[in-house]
Image (cartoon, rainbow, N blue to C red; front, top):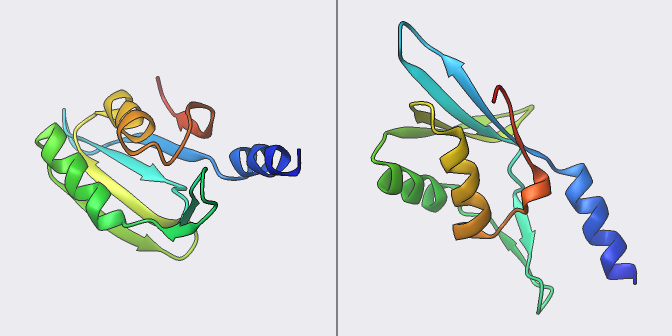
Length: 110
């Protein structure tokens, strides 16, 4: 019972925000902020560090776009990708990486 409560608090406390920022004309960026630095494995309970470079590389390769990882003191690691791919990125993070759940994702502007 204690583990279930811990998981629920974790989901509420750490939301992953996916936004679209307009650049100039038709150009835009998709930003992913609030990604957790550490992840607890469900079966063994081990706590592992999240490799942001590896996730960014997989996103860039999957969606054939460019991106950059920005270290921000307030927001932590922020991934910035070219184009408006908010829904695709959310689906990728939930299904492929399985680090976050559907209720942890917050897509802004759609």
